[in-house]
Image (cartoon, rainbow, N blue to C red; front, side):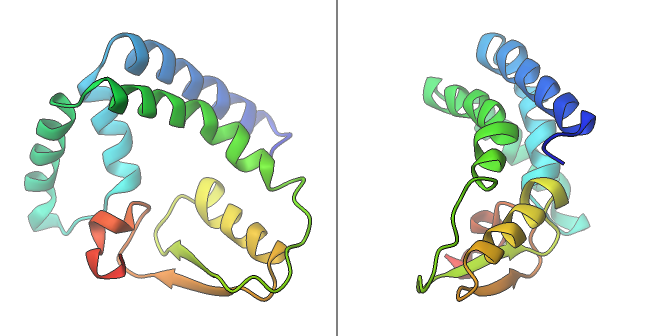
Length: 142
């Protein structure tokens, strides 16, 4: 995947989004729409309430939030995924690798599976009712 045209396009789009919309324009609607669908999972009855609260919180965000949002989109397709291609096998680390059940496949699920291959003794677990931001979706896991 890392050598594919799809990965190159994803990298390009995410870098453009980070620079133009988030780092320079502080486009609340763009960041909310992008991250809400990816990071949060809510029941249909709670979805609109969660979306309104999400927009309110993002609109009040400080400089650090916007810098992090832009940096995340610049790191995401490169540093985070590319790092797994050169990692040596890690043996006997007492860890649990947790992966959201409904997380994005290429960015999250595949990366965690590859990491698990590098850490064969690690326990692998799925986080139910979660997409990506499980600290918000399932506070009992924190």
